[in-house]
Length: 87
Image (cartoon, rainbow, N blue to C red):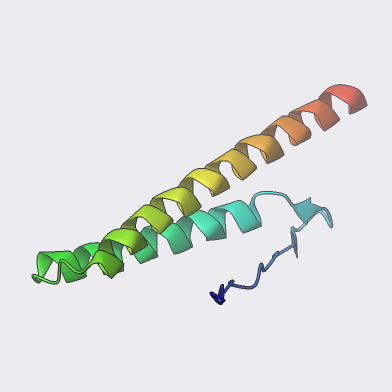
């Protein structure tokens, strides 16, 4: 039986100066993690390490960034709807 390792999901919720949760904090941190992961894998490839693991890391980094961009867009839509409702 194959053992599947999963990374824990960490939700980061911060409060901004107005006391409201910052909907963009977690997606922006996720995007930054994805970019950092991509840079690390790309640096390894640039140094000649073309192992499959580095290619997988680049693909995972791309998916991480894309998923967090969707989360940021959703947060933007929620915030826009909330402002429309309050206006």
